[in-house]
Length: 252
Image 1 (cartoon, rainbow, N blue to C red):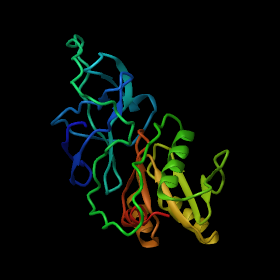
Image 2 (cartoon, rainbow, N blue to C red):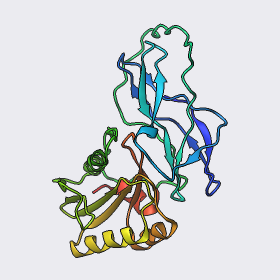
Image 3 (cartoon, rainbow, N blue to C red):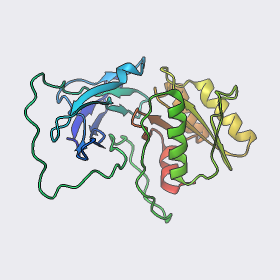
Image 4 (tube, rainbow, N blue to C red):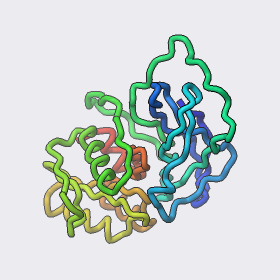
């Protein structure tokens, strides 16, 4: 598991305890991007796919590869890029594998905990660990959201083949969901249109965004009871409001 570091949001000054996502290297060792302790996080206002990857070297086998840039979604709606230590030009020789070390199981990354207090668990049966899908394209973002909704218990999820005019990317019995993979925070109109689609279909409305939410959009979602999630490029959604906490707690 990666090291835990404190991260202060430059927008609202909230402090988070952040642990970088862990993935298995090609050699099987668990590997996390080394965070640059003490460096200020950067608020993401414009996202490009090429800027969303960092170079990480495995200390066990010496392999050097591209990994998703660690990100943290703050409850205020800001999405933060967490600085990573650059790979040294003259790396030390690969260390020997520790005796008895086990291969990574490929389970989902551990991201920074949201500042709100999670709701207590209900009597619903425990779910297995969520296994995320790395996001490289806009279509990957929709697929990652579909996997997460399936993990929450929704069934027969259908993806729209193209970006529909309604904005609804995913449908299932009792569910409509929108996935915004753009570089701008979702706005008030986005949230209200999703709510109207859910109302007309008598379905739960769920919103996923890569760039977070405008303040008025989040406030409106709270009023309407719409779960909001922020996604990073590891494909792991993070709840940013109480309806999202409730959905995670109760499931579909």
